[in-house]
Length: 250
Image (tube, rainbow, N blue to C red; front, side, top):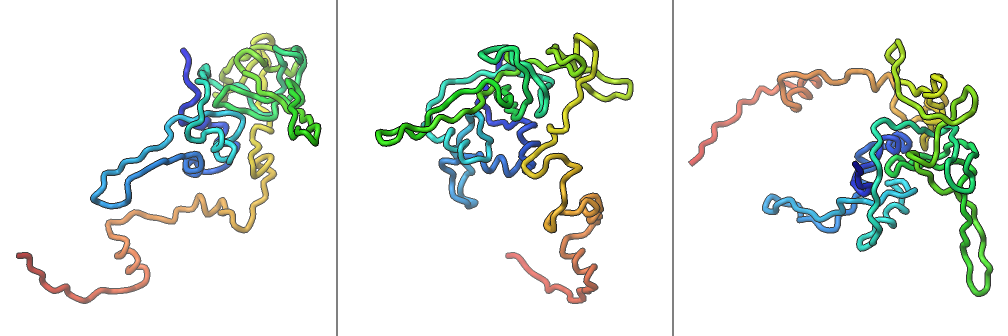
């Protein structure tokens, strides 16, 4: 079974890395070409992009918008669905293909929409940029993504050798990654918590504009059988003694 990668769906790890509301990501990547005017006399209709191309650019960036411009033709891409994602930022992996086959490195980026990871310093390519008749250009070295299904393997921390892994449960009910070869637990690294805003949750320092944790957990609304206006009037001590006049419909 294979699933197309051009669906309008952002992966969970991408949302976690962005540390942005899901509604903002959806609004940032949305491309509406035409919609009916606002009004009761109009049926709500709109023409917008339903399928997106996911590459190495995040859905809320300008580069993602450029890759998905209207009229852009791209080859259809298929991605093998993975039920339990097992690769996280900070994991040590071994490259199984290419010129760096057998070398080990640390995952620095994860693109779950395409089953891709980028290993720091491995599987690199040179790109010539800025070449013209007056300038020879500059070569820039960058890492290419690798498929987690058959191009990389997790490294067992007990002996630093690659091994297939399984998700299992401990006696306490915690779901963990376990090396099939040695039975050792492979913990999820702290780097997996990194977002645009902080390296780890524990190291984040609240700013003045942040909502305090105590205010988030505090209950500020209690349901009651009254309208919003009645609730405000009660809190402000306003009493309505006027009797509304009679109205007649003909």
